[in-house]
Length: 469
Image (cartoon, rainbow, N blue to C red; front, side):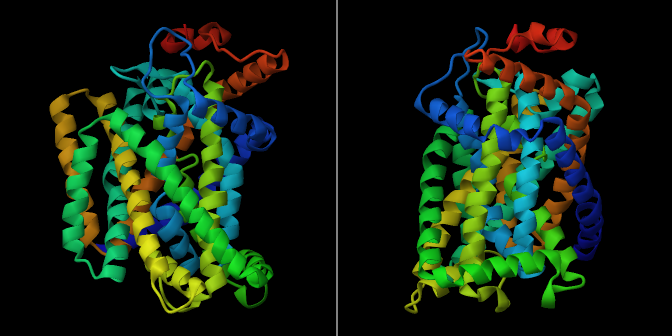
């Protein structure tokens, strides 16, 4: 089974998905005239503003999730295994050059994140306690092809609810087995019980949990990275040289190494920042804002937060330590790198990483579950089906904790590729609406107004965007 998974994953992720991702990202970067760069200041302003107070909704429905909470929910899914274990795996297999390509896919892929999150806001619907939306909703409303929407809903449920959650629980179990010799089976049981307790609380408990835990742990991890880089400041020029040489096959990193670096950097970069994948739009749609572009910009900032800050922190820790040449992989490589960087023969770094990965990966499990629930409700809003799904998620969390690293990553790569291709086709088809919204937003900003969107701005879909009447 492992050989079959590796063969399928190699074709889908190494060739088809990477080509599609880069093509879509370049198209959207050109079409938006580099929205991810030229509106960076506006992204920061909106995030700070949304963190201070709730923004009134553009219609009379009062959503329970603020713009900042929606951002925190998406960060909870992004910040996790991909940042600590995924980066380490990319370096172990693809070399230091994979970090360069991870940066590149984040910088240009952020435009795809803007398009998909803006579309999610445009086509969102009113739920019982909050707005609902995401690719399944904008595919259904924008194309009138329910089969396409249902296909995506199935793929994201399999990817996030099951495949990605096995990766998260596997990483936690591996970290604690490595440092504390804690049995993987017992960690699987603990994670399963905690997951079920949280997910039965609903979206309110998920967003509150995420907005408190994730920022604290992310800041602590970045501070640790700064300390380690400061202790190894003389090695920074060498680290950048390794990254550039590895990315372009210079010197000893020639030949097939450049292909491995590009492939692993883009694959693990996508797993971490999720730009264009179709996941974060589910969180983006829940926010209450006066213009779809506002949440599109805030979610774009999430790509930078994830890759340029947290992924880079892990990369510099590993490359400064020199432990990437010692045969370690995954979360164990990150743990060993921190221990080596701090010195003294202690494993304080490994202990901190174990605690950090627990919170990072566990919040990802919870957020991943929500993405699946949203899409299951799209297919059929049946409470019995949702309860069965919750129990199945708990089961997959346990399975991930006791399975091998190669198996869970291979499974995740396949479902991620299929889901991403399905979403990319949709946003390429519907992206013109996000371009219109961006122009409308900028026109209102130029007049000094706080942008407000009305359905009449795009008459051709006015009847399909009922939350903006």
